[in-house]
Image (tube, rainbow, N blue to C red; front, side, top):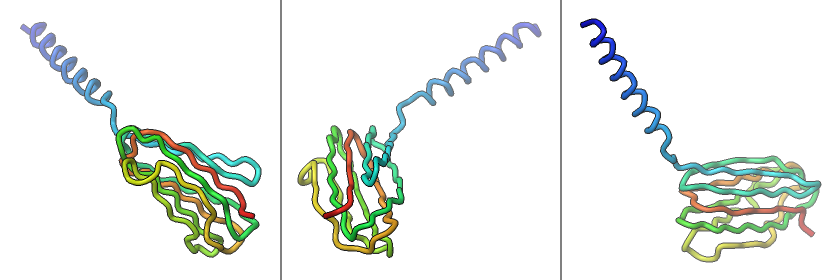
Length: 139
């Protein structure tokens, strides 16, 4: 009798553990941002399967403007936002690319700002696909 009870308890434990294991293996929405710096330039890659992510980077810009570009290849939707603030904290760029709304790439020059340490923030919202961005000191 004791053996049957232990077998039943073991079976219930195994079934419970298996259901937790298989439930935790589902693809949860995820988004990643990889920021890289090369010399005076900064850039990065973004990708996701419907997730959200935000990442910031401090970049030293000795000039008052920056040249920038960004693009997405979003398969199922979402948005990719690039925000740049100058050394005084003033926003010199706030641009968003959204799947199905407008262009899938953008570029230009930031507004004029204070030279020094600039804050670059990348925001992915419900992002499904991939993309990239680059920023360099302006002319």
